[in-house]
Amino acid sequence: NAVERNRSRRVIRAAYSEIENKIQGNYDFVFVARSRTKYQKSTQIAQLMLSQLKENIVHGTKEYPYEQYYLRNINHAFQVPVHWHEQVEIIYVEEGNLRVKIGDSEFEGTKGDLFFVNPRELHLMGSADGRVRYYTLLFPMEFISFQTMDNLEKKLLLPLRSNQLLFPKVIEDCALRQELISEVKEVIEINKNIRHFSTDEIELSEYHIETR
Image 1: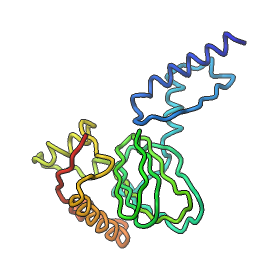
Image 2: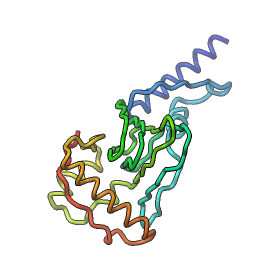
Image 3: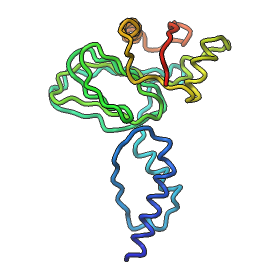
Image 4: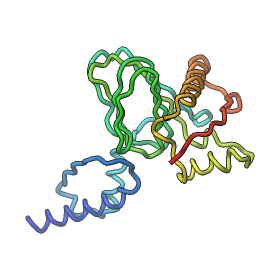
């Protein structure tokens, strides 16, 4: 009846308001109430909403929480569904065209483009023809934290881990972008050949990246 439908609407609205600030991006969602929705608390529904958008994949291992994926030879139109995860994601387009949406921003990626996705940032990617080759690199921010509280840790890594700073979605500076691409390619090659090794075997370069 009308009273029960209104109760379900109020619960769904309250639930979404609880998670809205946890998800970055301007998206439209359709929520369908079930017969038991009216009996649920908004906090319960909110957790269900959040879990439905979270990517349910384990990346890497506990000892080495890094994973990279190489997508190619798809040869048909595709779109990775909108999702979020706790890891940073770097997207490198090796060949072809890749549509990338990160938060409120949409890009048409081409060969050599590099994109950054912050933790808990809604994003999707796809191709109209599938003739694209691209890498995604995923790791938690803790993966590149250091024991010493030096300037790199205090001014960049710690603020990034605490969400006081965010990676830019794209790097506008051409010289810096090329330098980063070279580093990304090197990391990719290392991880093609080595699957399990300690974090101290990876040397990360210090960059001045404009954050937002």
